[in-house]
Image (cartoon, rainbow, N blue to C red; front, side):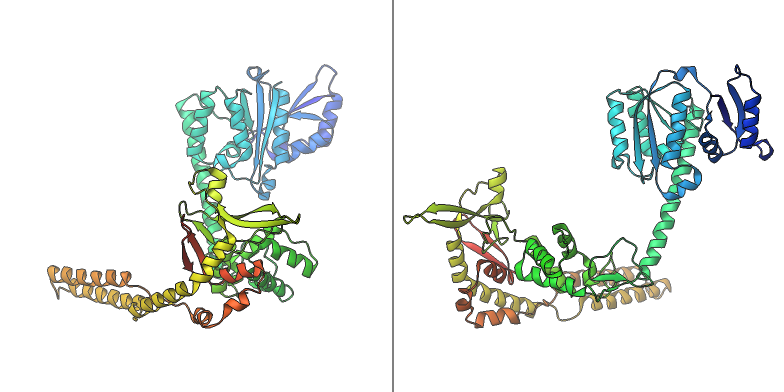
Length: 519
């Protein structure tokens, strides 16, 4: 088989010098058995690959004896599909590098491929690049090859950091289709210029993309991937409520509020809608702000499935998620008790004791989870669930009454004027004061005196307490109702939901006393 040495050039390879494949075959047939190399010029990678498919071994490269026997690795990177048009696909890069290795009789050690990653991305975020650096430090190879410099880096700062690592470990790099020299000042300047141009081009592309996204977001156009069940896109890519799956979303939020358990919510949705729902999917849906109408920084991006207030309440409940274990033990105060020594959550634990009649009785208690896991907390004491429940029942009414009284005092003492509106008025006065000063109607001392007075008023308004906005009707109703009788009929799971409906946390002190904090 004859070897065709294809020399890629822009100087000699004019249109009339491009050899059609038929002429190449005819020229080969006229060659003697001793003439095993034929040189000609082609203009594109596409022609090179077309000739290779016809069964001819062709090379862009001439052998370089200095490279013979070197241990080499290939680095290949492709950031997006548009590079297909420029011959920079993963397959094209691999073929060119393979050809270079074969012509120069090099030893291939490994291949590193970063697919769909930009060269402006930090090198420690490029997994294959990090693996390549590990090989550099282990002295596993002598040379790194890639097709072009922009496949390697488009970031000057990162390029020089990596260059220091390569030089310290005696590893070189080579762009096989470009000519660079790192041994001279002019050569290094040329590399810096090329990297600067590539970095600028990449940054300009990034700015254009950001501008497009900003315009789309301004017009309420969704710019991300798929949407959760219960929402969909209309023809203009605006997010709207999906009537087919809206009940699914509402059931999800209702069930989680009722049980405070993501696992229970997952099992409920699977059973009711006869579809596969993952635990992580439920967890993502519950915290997706699109359900309250918010996307990015726009609180009115789309119609809200639930109110923002309800959504924020669900986020607080999600932090205290009840986990269903194989023992099926439900703890009344799961997610509520806090260790006062380390401010970590206290978790439930159960011990079983055999009774005289042969049956087993479960004794549930709470302990500091941070102490159990890391031994870094000094709270080794446990608290029986019966004791905690009795304490809460005896102290909840006085604590609620005190909470309501403090709330009403705060509301009465809060400034009734709108601080934002008052500050806007003062800002307008400052502007008028500035106009008087510029028109020489007041001197500098008078301007400074009035300006300082206005700024002090703004600072005082910023410190004023905002009037509380919470509706305490439900809390007052709880104080007036005889809920204790109904409470005793609740299951442990229902009791947990009851306490979480108005209690945010309970700080447990070592002596067993507790500070109750309300929502």
